Length: 283
Image (cartoon, rainbow, N blue to C red; front, side, top):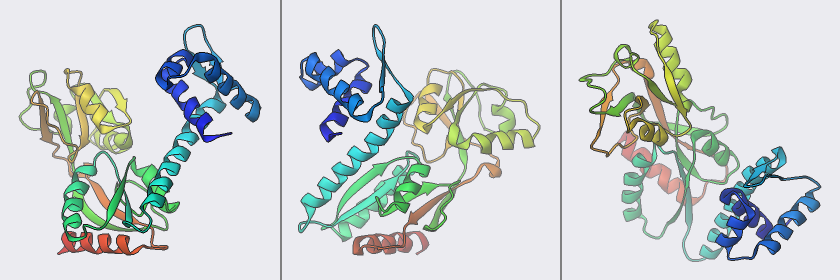
């Protein structure tokens, strides 16, 4: 199994058909089909269920697609670090879609103090960043609770409540509480489904969740046409003028943003960044 084969495989999956992938890769279809057949023969498994118009992944194909993405990204990161050897130290930082807005201002000011440091940013969910920290693939991350850190070190950055996001003309709310928003269709960021449902049921409120999303940004997009009210963390930036954002009043919807790191083999750059963050957060 070669790296080029994995790149071809991922292109086929993302394009939907071998012919579409071949056009994207500037290849003719027969060589690409041959590479996919060769990959299957080497593994001794079928990766695709070939349909008339498009392909579908087998269970083995889905696993290979998931794992190959991690592998190729790690190879890219390795290439980046090797090329930077002797030139600039690399600080590998992770952030989630709901913490990136906090990280960037911190990083901007830190960079002014340490202009010689270069960066590799990983945009993942908290569970994935947690794993990357434990595997020492990244140095430090801004995570959001709930997350089981186990051996990792962490410091509280801030606590944050949830907000309701909705189309202004569709839902005329002046203030948001669970009692009010539960009267309308809800769009929920899956990561906080248990937190939100527990808060609703604690108050014996009837509710209807019409959409569960794996990303808070998707929840906001789904709310744009007036499909329902999205409940997301407050740090998710909403810039659309047709949308309104109201803080939810209930304090039991509070989550924590954590600065987390693996204390093993801390680099000088990681120590500098941690010291800077702690100084800024705690004064």
